[in-house]
Image (cartoon, rainbow, N blue to C red; front, top):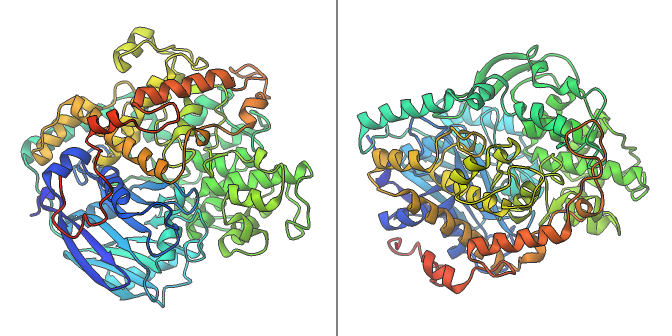
Length: 637
């Protein structure tokens, strides 16, 4: 039996082949918990300013949450962090499945990889031992071929993280994959893994986990599972998966079609999640999840017949409405290809929509597109672009650099139509009518992102008294208002920082249901599982410390207020659809956005340019200088 509080950080130097182990002190746990929080601590200290994300000096960090392995709330989530090759800012991606818990059962909570192997390599974690093995025979395989080959080599009872051809070819938004669906997609962590010649990380064996108060913890986990599964949201998520969100947001006018030209599409109902029923044959979920939001499906026709899991809300957006497609089977086939090759599906969808609009507007010629002629909803063009980006062929070589770098090569005027911030594409929603969403996407520490703060409660029109009790301040209950929305974003940033550091699922938190578990429940669960005692305020402070440290990393890399804005198009052009909740012509107000942004900074204790103040750093215990030697001795508190 293994108590997770005895687990270690393992550091691998690929240049020398040296592998070392380091204790994680309780003092460090009390400041950063684990997962994303400890990853950020390691990243900030180990990297110098200006490191090339594709150089051996970058580090790839895999960290499980403090509560990884408890039997509730989707505790299989874990974080993968490095400096992003897509944005040059903090890179971080959260992934589920079962690898994280398997790694923890091997006595490892954090795995830090530095350098570059001299040949394709598998990192094998086997009953607590870590070795480097030759993977030359795996290089060139796609994701599914790699997983099959690993199971033949190491046995069926393994968990693995792998890259596909996109990671090998250093596509800047390549993903890291696990099992059928698990994907660390955002910010290009698969590209970093490929740059280090790591084809796969495999975990097998290990010991069962034991907890501080086993009996009480298992009983409480049962109560928390009943709590989340009993909510309307939990039931809907079990029934439809994340596409349930489309049912609400489409009639409100909050989806972007044909890049960002309109908020309506003829035949949209064919993308409704009810239409997945004819393909479904079961459900699955991550470790410790009672909701099981993923649909197992079988597609028997089309160009790419296959079996898979999904699709998620973002997949339907990426390969459905944002590219003008209403064919669900096209969505499934495109999802299969991006999973097979190891690509961020949202980045691919945004890029395809972008170049289609550029061509339509005469800003991109057929010659620049290798003779191809993009049209809205054209599945053959979509599939071809996925292939060309993966293998860096023709126009795909430019697009593989990411939407911002590609715009610099494709000419003046193209960046205006790129729906991105800090070089990363937005989720496939139209956030112009929702100032809170626009702010959250823009200030995210990992580039445009909804998984750093998304306050879905803002869409519900909840009573003001309830909002005040939740957030501790007066907040407008109109999602179109700017009033108090910086408070919502700040609150959910801290919530997400904590939940990512605990290793739990965001979809089982208060961001989308007022009846979901949150800080109060987490303090009790932490004590029963680990013996560590925190107050609710302690967890808020930890969330603030983690978020501010991530901000410090980005400030050190040259990011500032200028990088915390939505695409210019969202200020200049209004929404286009009629017969939806949002008024036609709705756009962001620049003056009110600026005011909201300033208030947001001050809420964090940062300057009006977004730099954490000395007073804030002192309060959070972040006044220490970067220490690249943190792993040469016992980890300090």
